[in-house]
Image 1 (tube, helix red, strand yellow):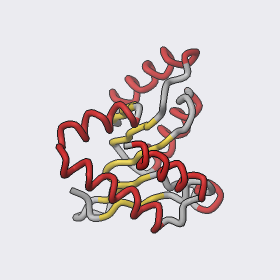
Image 2 (tube, one colour):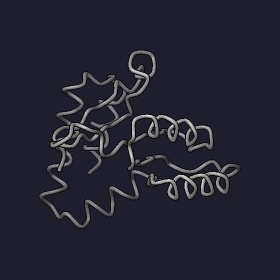
Image 3 (cartoon, helix red, strand yellow):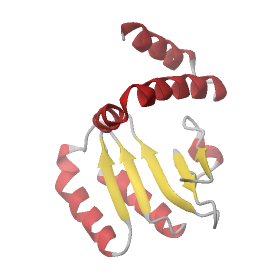
Image 4 (cartoon, helix red, strand yellow):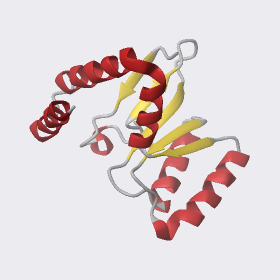
Length: 145
């Protein structure tokens, strides 16, 4: 579907590459980013949305996923209004809780997809020299299955 998926250096990506998103899915024909993914380990805020809209507009990225465990309750209405305005201007933003999305996708994909997902996560943890605490959390998760 994409020529490549580029991964930002998540702990320090803004310091070294201020325009890279957590994930960027690149088109095979044009080399343009077709889909950007912003991952949050906290509630999504209006400030997050505004920053991402500006970055994606400057780079002409039209499809964006926010993966966040929740939306900040105080900002929820403002976020919805802002995302609707961005949609009217030609950008599509989607807000997902990763675990809810993954549960649905992995259920539809069957055993082969679930096994492949587990293997890919482990390989990426190795490839990206992930912090020991995250690798240990992954080990505990796998042991609990």
